[in-house]
Amino acid sequence: MTMVIGLTGGIGSGKTTVAERFGRYNIDIIDADIVAREVVEPGTPGLEAIVEKLGTDILLTDGTLDRSKLRQAIFDDNSLKDWLNALLHPMIREQMKADIAQATSPYCLLVIPLMVENNLQAMTHRLLVVDVDEEVQIARTRQRDKVDASHVQKILAAQASRQERLDAADDVINNNGDSNELDDAVSELHQQYLAMSLHYQ
Ligand code: ADP
Image (tube, rainbow, N blue to C red; front, side):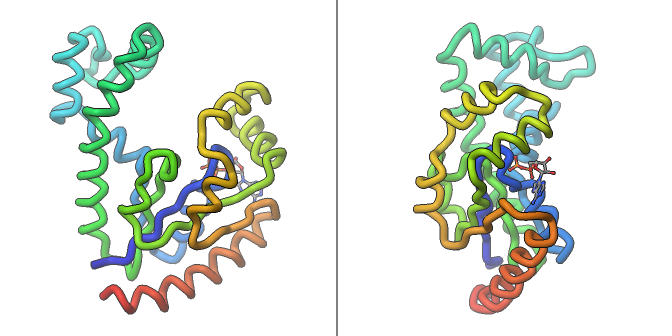
C-alpha cells in the first residue's frame, strides 16, 4: 500500500504551489477538486442523479454541468447543498481511494482543501498543513483571484481556523517566505517521506 500524505491549508495558503513542488519529484498527486469535477462529468452516475433531480436545464448545450446555474440553484434552495454533498461526497471518496490504489510513486499526495472540516484525515497516513499568516493569505488570495479583502474574510470564516488545522497536522510547511524557502521545505519533507515510505511497501 502506498503511503498517503494528506495536504491541506486554508484558501491561498499555497496548497497548489506546494503540490506542484512535490510533483517535480514525480510524486503522484490526487486533488480532491479535480476528482470532484470528474464525478459529475457527462456519463457519470453523479451527473445522471443531478439531472434527475433538477432536469436537463442544469446542463449546458454540450451536455456538461452548468456550474453557475447549479450555484444559483443552491443559493435559492439551501437544502440542495446537503443533498448534493450526500450524493457526491461518497463518490469523491471512492474515486480518491481508487486513484490512491493506482499510485506508483513511493508515496502519494492527497490534496483536500477542506480536509479538517470534512474530517477526511482518516484517508491519509500523515497530514501536512501549509500554514501562512492571515495577512499573507489574504494578500495572496486577493492578488490571485482579483477579489477584495471582505470576500476573502468571508471564505476564511467558513473554513477551519488556522489553529484547528495546526492541531491536526503531523507536519507543517510555513509558507510566509519566498519561493526558495518553499523549495527547501519541500525538499526536506520529500526526503523524510521517502524514508518513511519504506515502511509502507
Ligand atoms: P491554495 O491552492 O492553497 O489556494 P495557491 O498555491 O494557489 O494556494 O497560492 C495562492 C497564491 O499565492 C498563488 O497566486 C501563488 O502563486 C502564490 N504563492 C504561493 N506561495 C507563494 C510564496 N511562497 N511566495 C509568493 N507567492 C506565493
